[in-house]
Image 1 (cartoon, rainbow, N blue to C red):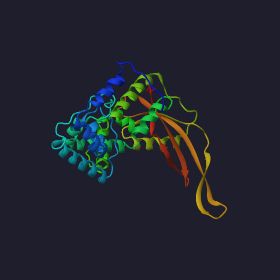
Image 2: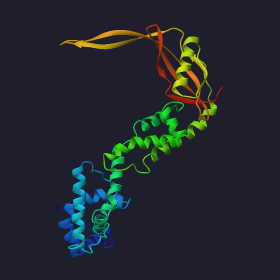
Image 3: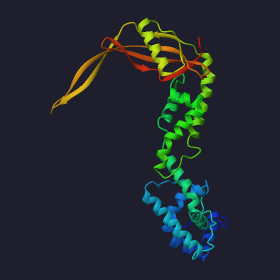
Image 4: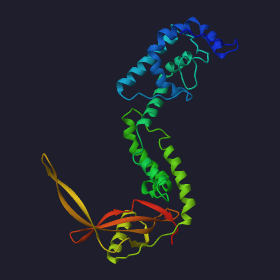
Length: 317
């Protein structure tokens, strides 16, 4: 409290202080009387008035939207009467990049255009809250796993873009409607950009890979799985197929039965499996791809436990 700091006359801090005291009476009155009431609502709309301002979000419930619009309506009335002609502060102490605080002339412009801005705010808010389902997870899988295997949804995003986009927007419509918004034109833009990056990696690396033929064969199982792949991916061709091991492998499964004070009780079952891979040619893809599969036994017959789902791209040989 007893420290004294001497500043040179040219200090920007002194200039800002002088400018602060030079604020006109209307700016001072607005800062003291109107700003505390309307700051939050103005800030929530500011980014969609001018993207230089940071988007702060926060409008989710109907009551929050009602309050924001009511606040801006009141502010608009004040700006046209009591605070008519109010201007932004000009000092670097108060006017900071990305922040709408103390830009009181801008506040009035936002309030005046509230009805025009509201749909953009709703769309922006919905975009923060509504994701694209498993699309991001599927893209991450392609980027993060060795050899960049591409899940089938991501393959549609890359090579059947128009169809994928139409299906995704139809899926998004009711979700955006919950927030009073239509699906914005750029709702899928980020996913499409990442998909293009993954596609470039696939096209770069696929020519250097070829199918590694598994060691074992089982004619009945291979014929069964070929039919399953043909049904799962219409028009596809299984060029090669093989099994990773010769004999059936048993795995334990537990089915919950009951519990008491001491224990949980389960019925123990054993299921037998074989697994392998295929070299698959899918229509509309520039390369072949290897996909995994798992087959099980059920009542003496075969059951497809897993039929592909993602493919690592490579030469068709």
